[in-house]
Length: 521
Image (cartoon, rainbow, N blue to C red; front, side):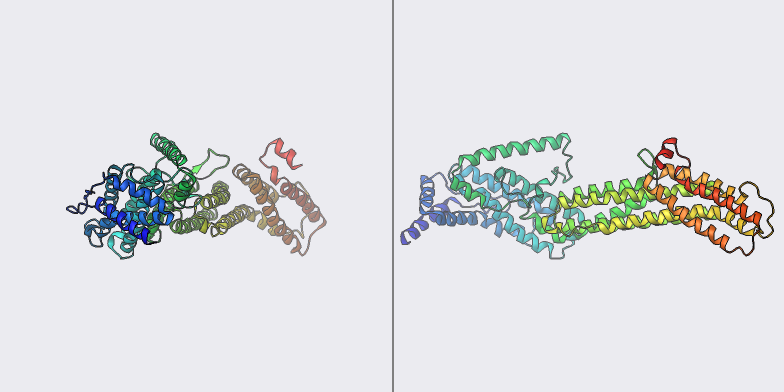
C-alpha cells in the first residue's frame, strides 16, 4: 500500500504538470501543459498494473482536474453572464473545446478502456445539472419564459444526443428506458425533424454510421474493457431530465393552443362527407393536433411533463364533448321552433353528424391511450387511462339518439292529438286507414331514410327500436283512455293498429334497398 501511494503521488504530479489550464480567458481558455513526455504514457501502464481501484482513482483525478476550471468560472456561476438559460449553449461550447483539446493533446495517451472522454461528459453533465437545477428553482423570470425554456431544453437534448452518438457503444444503454430511443430528431432550431424528409433520412444514416464505428471500436476492446464502459450511465437524460418538474409554462402553452384550436374549429365547422359516414371535421383535426402534440412533447421528455400533458388532452376531449352537446341543443331548438318537416330532417341530419362524430371519437380514444402508453416513461404507464373520456363520447351518442327519436316524435305528435280528438263513441263508417295514420307514415317516410343514410347500421337500428318503443306505448295509452267506442270504431282502430304496426315493423327497411329488406327478413 505504501508503494502504491508513492507511485500514485508521482503519477499525479506528472498529470498535474500536463493538465495546466490557461485561465487568461475563463470562457475560451485551453490546455497549455506539456503532454509529450513519455512519462505519462508509462504512468498509464503503471496505473493499469495497480488494478481497477487505482484506475478508477486516476480517472477520477484527471476528470476532476480537467473540469475544475469550468466549476470555478464566474461566468457560469449564478448571476454570471453565461449562467442564464438563454446562454446554455456557451456551456456546451466550452466543453466541446475542452474535449477537442484533450483529444489533440493526449491523443493515444489514455487507454481506450479508461473511456476518459465519456467520463468527462458524465461529470460535466452532472455538475451542470446542479447549476441548472438551482437556476430553475430560483424563480428567475427566464424560467417562466416558455420560448427560452424550450430552447434551452432543446439545446440540451441535442448536446446529450451528440455526446451519446460519440461515446456510447452501439446497443448500449438507452437514454430513458425502453421508449426514449424513439425521441424524434431535432434540427438546429429545435424543431422536430420529419423522419421521412431528406434531413431526417440524412440524420438517421449518420446515426447508423456512428453506431457502426462505435461498435467496431468496442469490439476491439477486451472483455474487461467492455465491462468498464457498460457500467457507465446513459448520457441522454442526465441533464435534460432536470427540466421536467419545471415545464409548467410549456404545459400552459399547449393548453392555450388546444383551446385556440378548438375555438377556431368550431367557428369554421365543416362536415367531412368523403369518408364512410359524414362527421364533423373538428373531431379529426382535434385528434391530429393531439397526436402532433404527443410528438412535440416526446422530442423533449417522456416523463412527468408528458404525463401532465396527457391530462390536458383529457380536459380537451371533455371540452369537445361539451361542444358536441351544445351542437345538439342548438339542433333541437331549430327543430322545435319550426313546424316544417324539412326543418326536422335538416336538424335530424345534424344530430346524425353528432352521433358519427362521437362514434369516431369513442373509437379513436383507445388508440390515443395506446399511443401515450407506448411513448411515456414506464413509471407512468399504469396511470394512463382514458376510459372515462371514451364513456363521455358514448354518453353523447346515447343523448343524440334520444334527441333523434325526440325529433321524429315531435312530428307525429299532431297526428296522435288528432286521433285523441276523434269521437270514437259515435264513429259509424269503416274505411281505409285513418288520416292520423297516414300523417304518421308520411313523417316516418320523410325522416327515417335520412337517418338510414347518415348513421351506421348499429345506431340506425338502435334509433328505429327506440322510436317504436316510444310511439307504441303512447298510442296504446290513447286507446285505453277511450271511454266509449262503437263497433265500427273498433273495426277502424283494428285497421289503424295493423297499418301502424306494419309501419313500425318496416322502420329498418324504409328508404333501403332490396338487399336491406332481405337482411331484415
